[in-house]
Amino acid sequence: MLPGVLALVVLALACHPVGQEPPSGELRINLGTEPPSLDWNLATDSVSITVIEQLMRGLTRLGPDLEPEPALAERWEVSEDGRTYTFHLRRDVRWSDGVPLHAEQFVYGWQRLLAPATAAEYAYFLFPVTNARAWNAGELEDPSQIGVRALDAHTLEVELEDPLVYFPSLVNFMVTFPVRRDLIERHGDAWTEPGKIESLGPFLLDEWRHEYRISLRANPDYFGGRPPLERITGYMVEEASTALVLFEQGILDLVRLPPLEIRRFVDKPTYRSVAGLRGYYYGFNTEKPPFDDARVRRAFALAIDRREFPRLLKGGEIPAAYWIPPGMPHHNPEIGLPFDPERARRLLAEAGVSPGELDPITIVYNSDQTHKLVAEKVQAAWQQHLGVRVELQNREWKVFLKELSVDPPAVYRLGWGADFPDPDNFINLFTSYSANNHTRWANPHYDALVQRAARERNPAERQRLYDEAQRLLCEEDVPIIPFFVSSFNFAVSERVRGFVPNPMDIFFLEEVDVE
Image 1 (cartoon, rainbow, N blue to C red):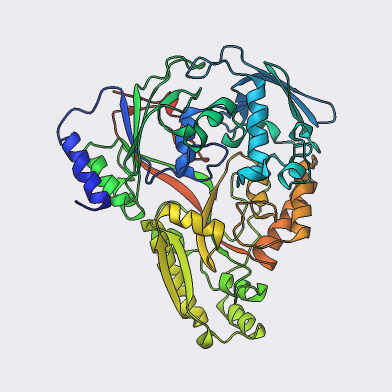
Image 2: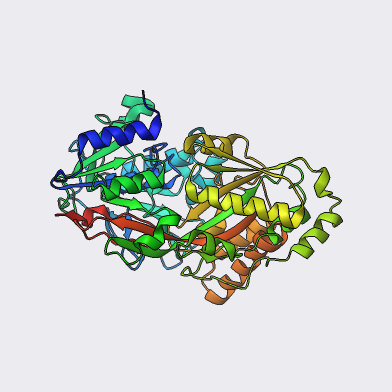
């Protein structure tokens, strides 16, 4: 049997010989890898989110300008003190099995997300809701005391601990989607498999051949109107260069461009690009020596010349020593540690670290050409400027995610893209209560700054709070090293109409058609 990707390529070529007309009404994309989960309470990665966004909708949806628009909620009101939101649900929404949308499905989904037994990494997203944090921490026995309740079948009331200026944007994100208790009780963990899952978005899950492809079909009863596409087929080709070959053979319609190929496509009509709200960083496990000393972490950050990454990747990356990206409110380009190898070496000496006596530093990243190129550049920089030995290890995506949650490596690669367009989405990531914070770093002052900024209505004061929090994160304690802000680069078949990449990397595929 042929291994992995090669077997997939041969099978794809067999199914769609070169020169054959592409399937009518079908969009063929590359997902890149197997989605770890289609449970929207549990999924955390961009691949799973891309699929879930086609299957489901939330109370709101972000429009082209990234402002929240009505979705499952046709309208909402907020109290004068900013603490109570009342969402009025559409009455014409039904799940794929005909069951009507009910406000109680949001209540159950939010309680499930926050339940300690669920162990959802995104549970902290709903901590602004009254008593949500206490329920998640096991300090509350009755989930009905959480500030979310169904006033009737079509009215959802949400009570917040404090005003939250971006709350309508937050409830566009998948973890806040409604969940069917009956499906989970009937099918258990298998409720997201074809034939078991029910959804209410523009597409329905038709087939999931694990490690190979996912097929979605148009939802004829979608409340927004049946989408133009009949079908979306997402293949799981991990090698971007292999996916590009399939694109050029006419077998795929939409792929992400590998870095070394961008220059070849930049002047072609098939090229699409947009600057993203996505940061690329290296994280430290701050409990593992020598990175349990902030001076050592600062030294490793100071030994990185971030200007090298755009030269290497050539994909429109923006060097970034800060964490809140350009295009996001309260961005400050003056924050962060500059390239200063002399200061880096002085900090190592001050910390009592002799580079020649250190065990090799291992950088762990998930398998991908871009991550490999970045890791090799960092390896060379740390060896040259700090005199340390550096080894590289790559992992398959699901294995990598599991390692991060169980025992994070001393140094690891990750990125973060905006789930909603507010700086809290970036800054909150590294609070002590965020399950997406794999650094093991906890700073009570940082947590307090983040919580104050989230409820602050004065823009100037909010800017001051975020600046102080970013300096703790990127200059003083340094549990992470921001490298650059990514751009999204695609090759899109000329038969595809209506695909427009956006800064949050959301795929609005219900608006796409193919010739």
